[in-house]
Length: 298
Image (cartoon, rainbow, N blue to C red; front, side):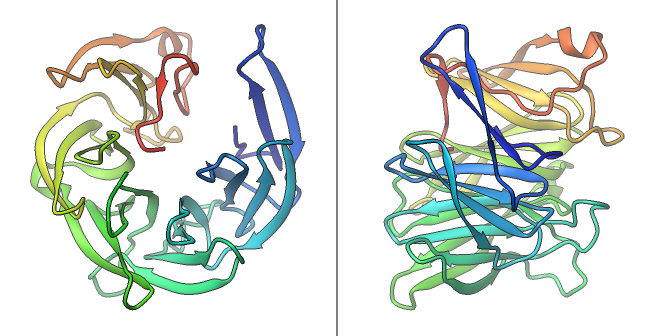
């Protein structure tokens, strides 16, 4: 678990009950955002939006090992593809005031930490206020394809690995303006990469896409309303339910505080958890315990 306010990472041993929490120091990390793992589960990588770093650790022994300087300012989203030895990092916003939004992804050679340039995720002239926030590779895509949410915009973009040039090509993927939605945040994929789910925080919804063309093309199937601030989603391993956490860092109009229960077969909201909301809390994330959780591409 990352921490926005402390240079710490918390690790929960899910094999022991009651759960034990271990705290490790990540000294070069301010405003810790996303954490990902290598395919073999031996390394972890955490983005530090406030200190422009990526801290790397040993996932077997639960220790911090070294720090990579981010190739772009304000790193938030991060995706690793071991098959092409590449890490992609989003350039989002300055953590203190949401200013200076980026519009590119940084590219890193995973094995060496070498910076390999950037790729743009917009075709709008500067200043364009895009702020890409998350990037996730489509499972089993060949060539590898990653999708990006542009937080301050209404768009999704794709970045596609070009084996001939050894870098990525980018292209527009979808514009939520057509369904009157904005602030796209999280991306999830099913195991074979044929479906994609995206949350938008304003006014608050979940969107279901079919993917084709090797994961490069998305067709919207259905959009459903959840509540203001739709952000992270937890999925049951049996594929029946999704739980949408409706709160985006307590921003006005995007801080409902509820958790929407979604039937994934009918793609409808079938219930709402208001326990936290009714007690004055605003959940920042949601995940199911290990025996029930489906990471959906994360």
